[in-house]
Image (cartoon, rainbow, N blue to C red; front, side):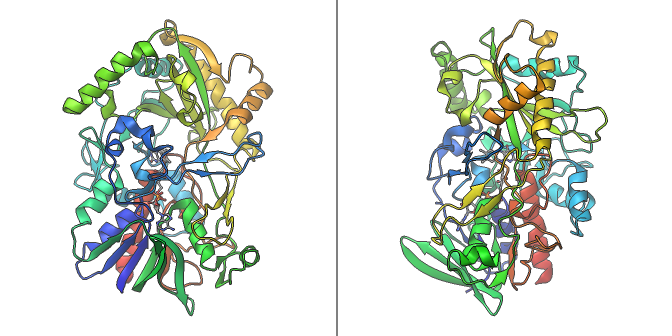
Length: 531
Ligand SMILES: Cc1cc2nc3c(=O)[nH]c(=O)nc-3n(C[C@H](O)[C@H](O)[C@H](O)COP(=O)(O)OP(=O)(O)OC[C@H]3O[C@@H](n4cnc5c(N)ncnc54)[C@H](O)[C@@H]3O)c2cc1C
């Protein structure tokens, strides 16, 4: 028997476990499906892709084919183990635009406007640039700058952007987003500062926090419309734990709705298909899935000035590995997309509609295209900031350990295609600037044959992917499709909250880790205030 049970030790769940157990009177239990094992590669920022295809640390879901992306399904990586997806992510620290949160509030979620959430972002933060209007220091989450760009192609993109009239920017968390420069990262002294290291490890020795790993939650135990505990599977055995105060579901945008549905919370007709008794008829569970669709504009380079796995570059790669091993120096102390920013595809829009992650290597198919990796070149990955397509997560079957059925439905809405087409043209404009003269070779993708808008749109459909930011499947609000209210309580069930990326009613214009950590902070404050 505990006071609180949290399912999922990821970006939100790890924060909640820490904050609730700060008070030694609270008996807290954290249940995590993945293991407590540490991988050396997790802590090396430059090795961020290492767990893209490792099932031990990654759920490696696969989505259903999308009509919008030419009937292709997509890899949906999600971190598994303490730290969740913050252990495999790109570590970019961004929050989006203030209007993203003001929009959440306007949609019926009091207390979620930017003025309300900014103090929570600052509370988590220990920002290298010091405290100020938008940043905090002394928090548990290190946020640091890039010390320098190690590959020439990175500075060239910044210079070419300025030549094309895009302002330089090195602060992507203020009220102004437009511009290109270096992001900030959740990295400290050349080591990943994920939620495990920053929030779970410091709390793990507290006597009032019990962490149960390799424990797959299979059902929320509910009596008389009140959550009383969690059933989980460990080593093939079904076990139960109970909560006297609250159960908090933080399994992420794919797993949280799945667990709710397995427990009888969801659309009645949908549950009936799997002979699951409906405890609470909430038709929004698993709906409203939003994700940032992306297209990569890939060029080869006339020079050997980026990151390549070409045989001739292996000595340099070896040198970088030694530099890192000996003193955490060199490019491996940073993530791969150090440079990026935001663009407006039209003059008359207020907030940029395109985000860029610029990578000084030729990257396609989640890094599986080894042919490209062995050449020299660069990739500008652009994504729609506020896409309009909506997907869903449903049950594949009633077996709790089956993967959920994910329908990303990328590019279903023509707006999303249109923004990407305009974005491709913007990036081409930048890459045609003088800064690139001696460097840029041929455009490999979408390629020189995609000239007209229709041709570019077709190339977008054939090659688009996503940037691993699923949100919205247990959305907060007060309409018919809302799953939780503004205090993250599941509508119609007592003592049960959802707190993770799934509660975002609308996707924000940026990477989703910091906002999910903020959701963890806000959930903790609300839970503790209620107690
Ligand atoms: C490859 C990649 C790169 C990314 N790069 C960035 C980036 O650079 N910057 C950024 O801001 N964002 C990035 N993101 C996105 C960001 O990391 C996520 O949005 C965020 O971590 C989601 O947090 P969450 O708490 O919702 O879920 P998660 O962090 O995924 O946590 C969910 C946890 O619940 C556990 N769990 C699930 N189901 C169960 C169950 N039934 N029982 C027990 N435990 C369960 C999981 O194992 C996991 O540990 C990236 C994502 C990926 C995949």
